[in-house]
Image 1 (cartoon, one colour):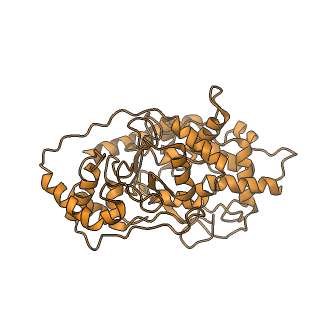
Image 2 (cartoon, rainbow, N blue to C red):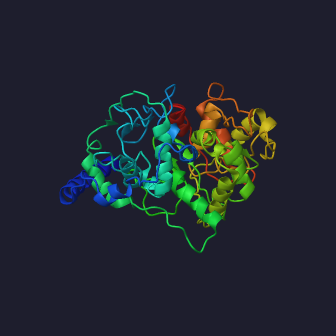
Image 3 (cartoon, rainbow, N blue to C red):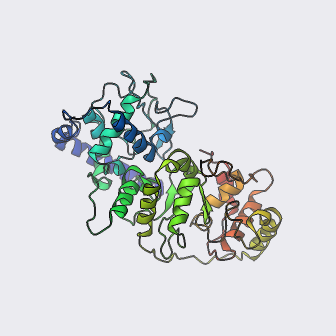
Length: 431
């Protein structure tokens, strides 16, 4: 039934998109947008200061993570972004004339970043996070463009799009954009401090945090819901937790320093970065300035409290499951994470009150038990302690038991996980 509803919605979107395409000639570039993207006489893309600034901004935006395939040249594209609708290969953004940005003007680049349209006016798929990048200022976009133009060109043709019909019909994006895309540069809030506004700009724009840390609907869009409220990352089987530090938020109890420490070193007194977030820390946030990290923390501290989550009562008696999980924990986990689940500061992360342990789905804890926990290597933590994988030594029932125990022990109050879910996540690729 879900697939029937999704199919109906997709066909409706395509129909609306075709109408929108015909009415508004969406394939044509917007003249005012192109004019905004033109260089002025005083702007020099070869200015070393502008290039260096653009390098920093591209790092904050984590551009290399998507635009670099494993073992490939940086920014030469080829990495395939998994989505529920098929894989989308990322393009080459080095200044190669034939396969990259060599022939692009700043107007072209600005149109892609700000409006989500390609060089010829075609709609870009939102696997490219233009829904967030639209908030980037023109000056910052110019600096990033100057940096990309300064790179050594790499000749690497793009891969074919991995989307199947009807998702491969670009005109259908016209309706999708009407539902989910609001174009516009970030506008500072005069009632807030300069630090708060800087943090909001980084989180909402270049950092594109909401692209992962919020739930998406059947069409891959973000419906009207609180920003950064947590959600399962589509097609990757990781859960990006709620980022509010207030009551019932995913980071409830975290201090500003805890947030800064995690983003800077990959580890804090409240937990460690792993999975997709470990790569974000490694490639991006560890390189941010202390001032920008503090600004991000200030903004996250201002996120509102969340509604208390409802934990459905289980119709099954889980007493035996929890007892078995407790036994496994005492034998396999307590030596590092402690009988009380509080870990060892700076060495082994706590499990008590850990946002990745008691998130709604249990995915993160299951995958870490199966695959191991590997915090990123950073300048601030060059030799992190890692957790070994237990996929070979624990059966699905054992993993379900120990994770269920951890999610209900000490101060945690999350629901149990099912053996069948463990089996499903065991088959999920690491990346």
